[in-house]
Image 1: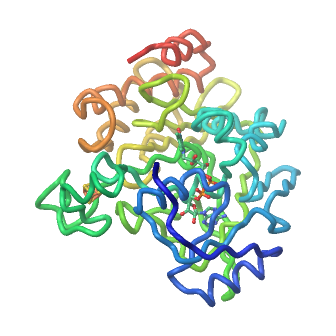
Image 2: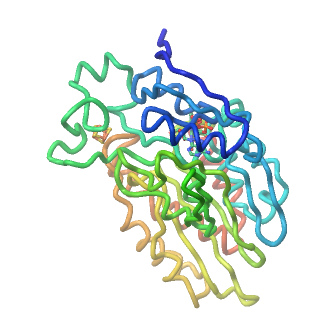
Image 3: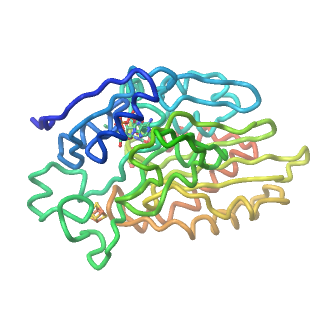
Length: 339
Ligand SMILES: Cc1cc2nc3c(=O)[nH]c(=O)nc-3n(C[C@H](O)[C@H](O)[C@H](O)COP(=O)(O)OP(=O)(O)OC[C@H]3O[C@@H](n4cnc5c(N)ncnc54)[C@H](O)[C@@H]3O)c2cc1C
Ligand code: SF4
């Protein structure tokens, strides 16, 4: 049985108190929300904070604020997010992403903030201490070599958050709070393409809120590739959002990819679609362009070439759903398929 290492546990009651503790404790402290990512990582000694600062009892982290835009507390559990009518009706891409994270039990604990700050993943890293010790560890923790790209000085572990690409496509922003003040950043700017230093969030900052822009006239969706339809981390996530004119012409669009780099990112797919109607040819051209940006590495599930090969298929599914095609049968096939 893997045991947790010793740590100190702090349970602040307010965002200001949590920020103060983080500032005082320095890099030895980490936030814990649902703990569904961090605690298993601690058991495997991938992350070994000396102090955990719990967000569970922090007031003001689980609110929602409606209106034309929508603000979601970073401490909302994913099941709470899924249960919000405005998310299901107006921000479909986020709803589809959140419903596909892990299992219903994990979504009862796992939070939106934790999902956005999820550690990157890799076959050589997501192993217990003894396994990693046997290969002399790796660049991301305790070692000198990246076993995926041995000449690389950079870790290429995979970003595996489902909600981030959906929120990037929706044009959402996050609020980060520390003792130095607060700042709002687009979700797309929260990440960098670096498997170790994958967040632009400073260690003393708390992600308190996700702010979604007004969605009137917008459609959105999220398509996920994973091995087990019941639950699994994504090995590809495609998120699309678009505002269509009455005749079906795309006025504005965004297409984001997840799980094909160390960060989720916005592609140029949306720009390519602007001013055009979503014909099969336009969709195929955009899908090819978006897929060219996907650079999966051989460090997660499935054959890497096949993962690259199916990117345009998934972008096509997403854009057809945005067009208004009934994609239920395709979704069911993917969910049921034991790939
Ligand atoms: C079996 C299994 C399957 C999973 N499948 C998926 C999946 O399919 N898709 C997916 O996206 N995830 C998956 N996960 C990962 C995880 O369950 C979710 O991402 C969850 O939403 C993480 O939230 P949490 O609150 O538990 O995060 P925690 O574990 O509490 O924290 C994760 C990280 O975020 C930081 N953090 C947490 N909250 C904040 C905040 N408010 N501000 C700043 N930093 C913060 C922590 O310091 C830590 O670094 C899976 C996990 C397991 C164990
Ligand atoms: S990509 Fe390389 S450095 Fe990063 S976790 Fe995997 S093996 Fe380690």
